[in-house]
Image 1 (cartoon, rainbow, N blue to C red):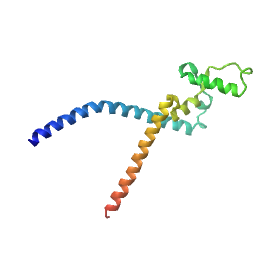
Image 2 (cartoon, rainbow, N blue to C red; image 1 turned 90 degrees about the vertical axis):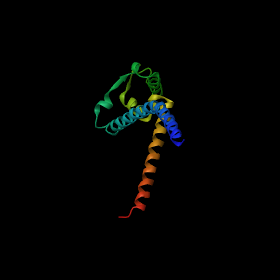
Image 3 (cartoon, rainbow, N blue to C red; image 1 turned 45 degrees about the horizontal axis):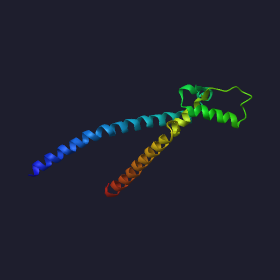
Image 4 (cartoon, one colour; image 1 turned 120 degrees about the vertical axis):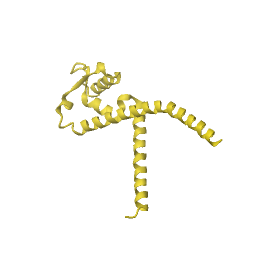
Length: 141
């Protein structure tokens, strides 16, 4: 009787594992991609004074979300440059790098996803410290 129950529960577990693995794999891949973006943009922001290409380069706003052109127009209006300098259609590369690093590039859900990733990493760090101290306390050298 217990062998039949174990066999049935194992089949159920395998079905659940097969079903959930696809979704968790996609979430894991998206998170890994986001972590690579955060890491690369963090390096670029740290060394922005050393890399003149970041300070001098601009990207066409036609390949970026519409918010960038609106932000550029708003900045020009605040600085009262509307009549002095013709309207630009490119944004500084530094803006895009900063928005990718903070999650603003992906919109409001991007910021929330970055927050979720940060909380997950903090919980991993805290539980790692807890496990280290628990093992160290119980281990006699």
